[in-house]
Length: 193
Ligand code: NI
Image 1: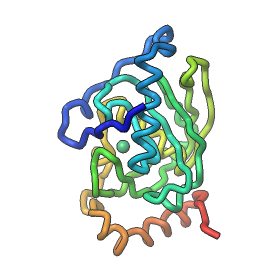
Image 2 (image 1 turned 90 degrees about the vertical axis):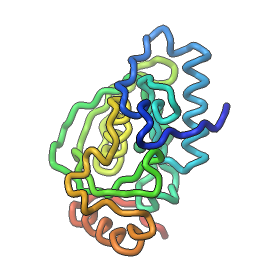
Image 3 (image 1 turned 180 degrees about the horizontal axis):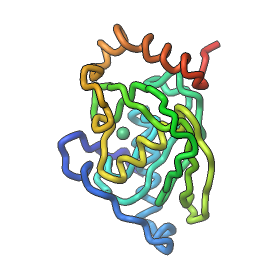
Image 4 (image 1 turned 90 degrees about the horizontal axis):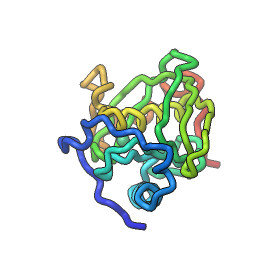
């Protein structure tokens, strides 16, 4: 396992459409090692998720794991979920307003709107089919990671560029507003006791 360097905005690898993993390839050392490196890199940088192109490997693998994440303290926890060749079906097209950040866009957040309910169909790290439904912050995180596999970054979804903010300014001026928007929408939030 290794902590890998994270590609940042401007590197062409982040703008490629990633390649599908052949089902027979899932068990190979290359893919299994890549998954281990994704896990270790996400842990090192407190990512709520990470996608393979972010570590310079444009294949359709991403993961989500939210465990008392210090970068996103209000996110409900999500166990480690590895997605190979994931596909999304929108179940609820109502939009959740949410400030997003990304390890590949360091230091910046911006307001995006994500579908509130989705179904995810993918393979797990053993090549077994995996299907689940996700909503609100979890659903938004999955949509963010899948965008990476299609060469998209969250900044592409920021419709009002006036909402772009560096993190100290986010904390000072926008964090409370962002939380109020999520609360007003009725999104489930993690509450510190
Ligand atoms: Ni990202």
